[in-house]
Length: 209
Length: 329
Ligand SMILES: Cc1cc2nc3c(=O)[nH]c(=O)nc-3n(C[C@H](O)[C@H](O)[C@H](O)COP(=O)(O)OP(=O)(O)OC[C@H]3O[C@@H](n4cnc5c(N)ncnc54)[C@H](O)[C@@H]3O)c2cc1C
Ligand code: FES
Ligand code: FES
Image 1: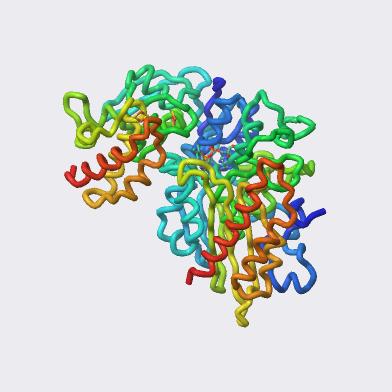
Image 2: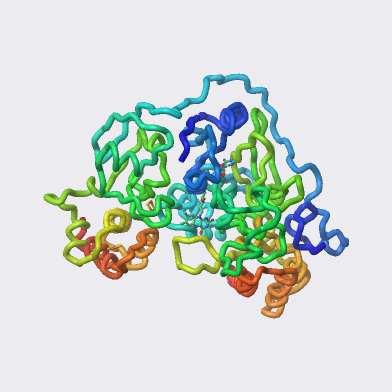
């Protein structure tokens, strides 16, 4: 038997002392699970909140508007945004948190909408690319993406814009290229428009809005 | 995903009771790993017990004796940004800040990260054979392709534990505070990976009904040298190929008196390298010692051909982690 496996008899951190005593494997003896507090708390027996498996009523706060909906617990925020709410900016591409096309902000922080349950987003602030600006009244970051030619096919763009906008919001005028790169590291662009995306983020930051 | 009932307990105790009371129930924290498994029908729970409303799990606290207590729902981004973690547990802040992507770090929690299941492609497709689902032999052993998600030891299951945070917690000798019903208990980090049937665990093995409540990192009086290194195919937005975290302290004679070496992504569970630790003890942390530890760490490696490259990567990761520790003053 090698001393790399199995794990049962292994020390948790080896000390010189233990080794010199010839007890290389003696440290972590004792019960596997050591009880530390046993409180007889009979108090709150309010049953936990239960939703589903069928549809349940929820109120979502999306782009500043309150939306009342009936959704199933298994529906992701991405599905809820696109189907009942018809906000098709966030794109379903991998549906596994590995591409970034569905990036939205949840309480002002970027997340993948495909990894969040719709019922868990209720009561929290959701911002999608539509919430930053509309084709008629674009936000600064959206205008800069156009000006800097920061898209080709455009499929990754709504997600990319959400990450770039967050970088500008977080770091302001002093946004560095490394910071912009780190902020957009969770967004893949199959067309490879990354240099222009970074340029757009930096240009938008310098404009100061 | 199959339709499921979503139960939202308000405390850890309620969560523990709910997973036991409901049929075919599973815990959910950030959901990055779990929803992925559910979408692939690797897990098809009837009930998901979500910790979303559970209180008291979101803080990083420094205790009176200097120990650090990290609530189960603390996100990887919180770990990376926390001044206390940066200052007292720098390798943890570093590893958390390098993991995955901003969008994942904002959701992924420390408890879910530790308990995430292997990325092995066979494991993660319900229709594929896998020893964890009863197949007689691990199909990775028959597969000639390059195996980024395989381990390097000759285990019955040659999957690799994907967490880049786990080796750091191992090296810091973290204890896992578990809650079962009204009772809280501590589990030693090593014990989270022991399967009672003797098979290698491809993910954390918690007692029935147990909910991770917090991660407890004990305080140490002597100066600690800590280092972390990871090797990735892409700079970001992927699991690492190999990670390594080390911690050591020096005796008054300048020799290493206490050492801990842990790897991630090279075995079904986070892997503590006893041979590497032995190679360090009683030595000064010279380049020669570091080289010897790197060689020792892989002396029992028996990789499938597709994962043989990881043996070299692991040695490099250990060298970098030790150099990182030595250089930090
Ligand atoms: C593209 C990509 C890249 C990634 N890169 C990295 C990386 O570089 N490094 C890395 O470490 N990880 C990486 N990950 C994995 C990610 O960090 C984990 O999936 C995440 O941390 C899991 O945490 P969660 O809170 O979402 O857990 P969940 O998905 O909610 O849960 C995971 C498992 O833990 C169990 N669980 C959750 N909470 C508890 C609890 N309190 N008590 C007991 N059991 C519990 C659940 O039942 C489930 O089985 C990556 C993921 C993706 C998609
Ligand atoms: S669709 Fe959500 S990350 Fe790809
Ligand atoms: S512009 Fe085509 S994927 Fe990014």
